[in-house]
Amino acid sequence: MLLASLLVSAPFAHPTPQPPPELPASVYRERRERVMKELGGCAAAVAAQGEPSGVVQQFKQDDDFFWLTGINEPGAWLVLMPKAKYNRMLLYLRPRDPEAERWTGPRDPITPALKQKYGVDLVRRGNGGPALLGAAPAHDCVAVLAPATDLKDDRSDVQATKQAAAALGLKTVFKRDLLARLRSAHTPEEIALLERAVAITRAGHEAAARAAVPGVSERDVQTQMEYAFFAGGATGLAYGSIVGSAENGAVLHWAEASRMLRDGDVVVVDAGAEYGRYAADVTRTYPVSGKFSEEQAKVYRAVYQAQEDIFAAIRPGVSMSDLGKVAESSLRKAGYLDKFIHSFGHFLGLNVHDVGLYDAPIPAGAVFTVEPGIYLPERGFGVRIEDEVLVLPNGKWRLLTADFPRKLEDVEAWVARARR
Image 1 (cartoon, one colour):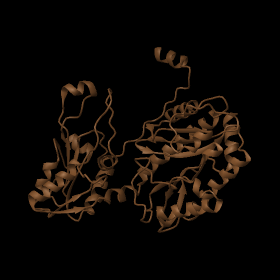
Image 2: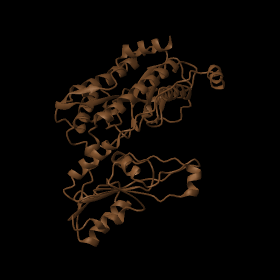
Image 3: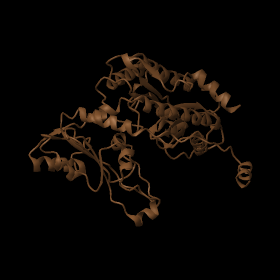
């Protein structure tokens, strides 16, 4: 009775979104098998990166470790021994702390069920680096998998790998682009999560189109959109939402959301929902009055044409770098190349700016954005259109954001419908 009365009295629609499905342990095990197949018989270790932060501790696992394990806790290690007879996949978790767990919640004990939960051959507690000392004599090399981020190279897993190689007299092999290459080609399970993130994002953008009227603030538009994200089942924001009206729309990553919208403005809305750790990333430019001015329409059509030219260039063997040149050529032809201040797009997956090889052919299963833009601060506005492309086998492709209106007339009609 109490629950029913609470639901009746709620002053807002009470959504009941379904939580994202957890990928089974077999998916992560198959990923690790793919990695070991390309290690050339070398042992390897990968350590979780980052530490919890905030009064209410928050931790988001780095993408590589999450892709390999599905584990979202700090201090974990994965050790791969492809030539071992029994224990080829070893997982090390940080020690339990009963006092800390009263604040942060209980953690699972080490049991056979935990080993089955994570799909590994062995689960232990502690630092996994010393486990590499067991690589000899089955392995004659150890591999560094961690991506190079700076010249210090001081990641704990990199140091442990080099120290084990020196102690055992093993060769050190560098496979720094291996995870990026494998992660950029998504499996059907991942694509399903990405598609759901896009569907949730569409509902948010429709709320933004409805809210972007004269007399409201950029923050008002943002809050309406983000409420729609979470009402639709988002598990988070893929990144901080960008809502920039008038001259703020010419600032690529405008974050203040402080300006009041006025009749005649256009507002650039760059925002995406996250669903089950997978990110969406969509940008639309909306006319606050409901109609683009003549100058705004000219710029919008140039950006739209740049997208069309990029789409037309997607074929077998094409690289992201190749498509970048197409974007530049299109905007040069339109007379706006000097107003295009960023790259045409990026890979998308567990991160909004995900890993991938930009000079290599784009693999089937990859998802990337196509987001040309023209920025005219001296004219008091900018225009960006951003969509997501899934590469299919044989160089074909599919627009994951096909349900988002893109043509100028369709965007104006969408705004009109949303506001009715």
